[in-house]
Amino acid sequence: MPTPALTRPRALSGMRPTGALHLGHFHGALKNWVGLQDSHDCFFFVADWHALTTSHPDRETLTRHVYDMVTDWLAAGIDPERCTLFLQSRMPEHAELFTLLATCTPSSWLARMPSYKDQVAADPELATYGFLGYPLLQAADILLYKPAGVPVGEDQAAHVEVTREVGRRFNRLYAPEAPVFVEPQALLTETARVPGLDGQKMSKSLGNAIAMRDSPEDTAAKIRTMPTDPQRVRRTDPGDPARCPVWPLHQIYTDAATRATCDTGCRTASIGCLDCKQPLVEAIQREQAPWRERAAALDPQQVRWTLEVGTERARAVARKTLREVRGAMGLVA
Image (cartoon, rainbow, N blue to C red; front, side):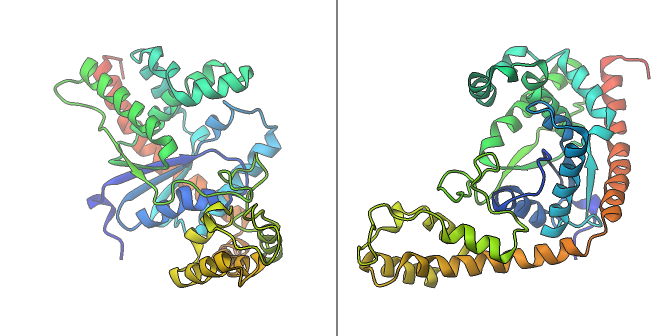
């Protein structure tokens, strides 16, 4: 049984809605979220404002992406009876805190973010105020709920550190005697990087992803067409799993005995690449099966209602924090 919420530390995280999720999303975030439900008072939100800082999807596409993503959350085992799920864009409190924090956060803190510099260099169209302010809005998202921890991948740890700095500066300027904000810790995921079908990090934009709810046939077809050790040209050529893009997925999905058999078979050329891929296909299909089953049982209206209820629950917490912020800044209630 989960520990009563009042005695549990709070955890908060969000995800941009880009539609149905893939295995990288599950192992990079959702698996951690599911595990935290019994030990933490969890708040998980749809970061749809953040989605607008890097793209401009039409209304129908964004709405579809939101509900496809939340369906995958529920299919993965996120339980709205044990955590709070909500929509960022339905919470004007996030925008208000973002504005108030902007009055005391040095712009240099935002401009120094590696993700900002790299992505703007690649696409100058991203040089907007919204994208520059992305880390500060993210800080507002987090600080509103005073979480002890933020489950993230390693690539997001820098954003949690910025959040800590923003909260620390606010407390120093406005509430040195009775700090308003806590400084959350990053709760890193076990699997920092899930490789895609080409060996690069799994990503929809790269077209190398296996969706959480791909059919068994689609999953098998994708894995069977993956490139393997480039030096193993013929079936009789010995290979090296370290050179093979399939091997990192084995390290996530198959057990030690299976990996040992595949390693030996590859190095001695006693098995072919399809023989090595088959146990991986079966392992991934086993993981996907309950996700598809849970998703099929969900009523779309049930998904919407889950977000409605969660958003109201989150609003009560956010409003309380904002009252404290206004009071510390001397703003009239």
